[in-house]
Image 1 (cartoon, rainbow, N blue to C red):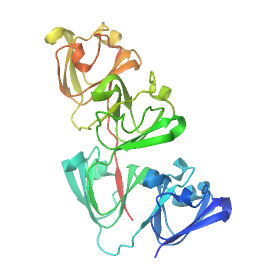
Image 2 (spheres, rainbow, N blue to C red):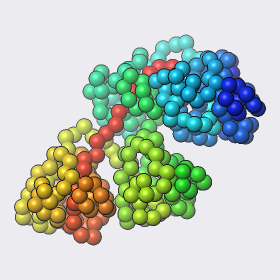
Image 3 (cartoon, rainbow, N blue to C red):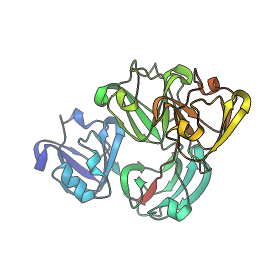
Length: 343
């Protein structure tokens, strides 16, 4: 049986709590955790309650402080954590390891079966992303970067239809009531009354000021946003959100200077920091997105109001949610990757 002991202070000092199973909130037993000792088995620890937030895999050993945890775990990215709030014990598994990974959520797109460690799914399978998986046997760790580096995700046997999530917090610096979401939501108001910070654990998202994907739009990549100015927000209102699907299709879009695809036309396949320098105009009245997802920005250098543009035909500027045809710059939305490791 696994056993881990948490200590309030560094170097195994202060109050302690011994655990041999999953614990959803260590702060029920300790005020804080600054060191731990794994006597038996393997554990995944989390920096938020209820098995949320950054994750780190710990084998048997002594971890006198967070810096030591980072140097001993190495690839597990301990530097991202400054607290331990919950933990899971990983059951012993002596049989075969087997998992199917999928390029899209809900088991869509390209699929491959894994039975051993994979240092890079892009090099081995030419997959640009992994958005869902079915763990058939064994326990696995998934990493955002090649060679088992970066943020980590622990997956147990079972179906995992969506590996992406975003967490909203009512107060700044990830405080107050929170709500974690892994798919689009047309009305977030029932979960929180305001939003002053956001943590994106994986994936790309668009959050909206109003319900039903209306109002100001903000594009968020994986990362931490401790206040709404960090996502260029105009206020603390976030009422709906959408996860942006990734695609291996090459980015391509046609811009038109008149409604209904009329007038001068220009083809885009790359980012455009200044539409005026590229198109000799700051107005786009219609567009045809042939491949990929894009962001229209109101001003040059990717500033101002944002508008998500996906594969479709937009006959007038109001069809992408804008009140005017003004476009200052355009950016492609590129995908991230995940890499697998057995436990």
